[in-house]
Image (cartoon, rainbow, N blue to C red; front, side, top):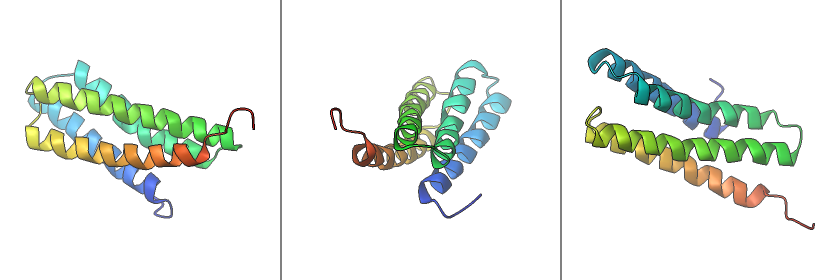
Amino acid sequence: MNNENPLLKKSYDFALQIVKLYQLITKNKNEYVLSKQLLRSGTSIGANIAEANGAISKADFSAKISIAYKESLETKYWLNLLMDSEYIEVTTAKKLINNADELSKIMFSILKSTRIKKGA
C-alpha cells in the first residue's frame, strides 16, 4: 500500500481490520448477513478514497470523498448493530467505531474545504 496519502493509508488499514473481523464473525459465529454488510461498507471507504485520488475534477473528487464519508457512517451503524446483538466484543466494536470516526472527521474536513460553492 502506498504510504504517500495518509487518508488512503488509514482507510486501507481500516479495511484490513474489517476483513479480519468479517473472517472472525463468519468462522466463529456463523453470521453472514450483517457481517457481509459490514465488509462491503467498511472496505468501500478506502476504495472510494482511492478513486478520489484519480478524480478528473474537483467535483469528481468531492463526490468520491462524499461517498466514502457516507460509507464510514454506514460502517459505524453495522458495527453498533453487531456489538448490540453480541456478535462482536464491545472493545473490538468501540475501537473500530473510533477508527471510523477518525476517518469520518478527516473526510468531513476535506469536504468542507473542497465543496464547490453554489452560484460561484
